[in-house]
Length: 313
Image (cartoon, rainbow, N blue to C red; front, side, top):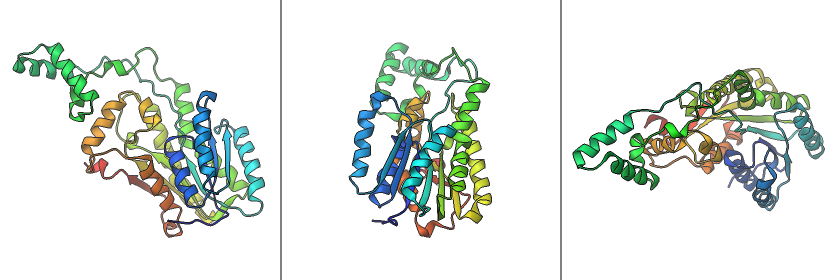
């Protein structure tokens, strides 16, 4: 088991579920102190507080903030309190930006694909069944986990044709998932909180280059995130900061479930992946932990694919 230095801290923006929480669990088990920023409703806090208490049981310091981490006031409040813990140690080893706050509206009306219906009719004709009955069989089989049927399931009902992406939707998504990471790095750097050898990590997905319906704003934000990470890798290297992006494979997180058509994205990923399964949050947490090790110091400005080979399947 890796053991990090006692005075090291991880600042995790978006740490109450998904990749952020999994990373917090892994890092705390390895002795890293945690500063977790999240924004959740009161109804979710019972579960979240239970998770945070488990982190504290690992013996590390854990600061948690349920506030708007996208605002300057929110950052100031977090960093003011973190500064009291750090003293003069400058011990922020990791900034992990794991915010899932993006708009999933379509660009315009989508009537649905006619291909699944046409294929079902062909099957029905050959089997001597009604197209409706074939549709029921395929839908039930898909719901039961037979992923190969995903191309035969209608998709129109997954998408809303009532509202479409506007400029404000793009602006908020680009800020939250694209360049907010830079604001955090600038403020932490300005306060001299980073360790001498620090790591900045963001998370992207295959949606950075594949056009998933309803993902346009987030895809644009991922492109921004990857671009600013490369810029930080160059401009902040003299400050001892290594900046990288992890491209996770399809992972069953709350963020995935929110994407329209996620059941088909998930099914396709399982079929493509050489290991025949989805990526897990623990898979990505392990990579994050590895990148915090001294031996990873020469990895900078990289896009690191952690998907089990899904992208080449």
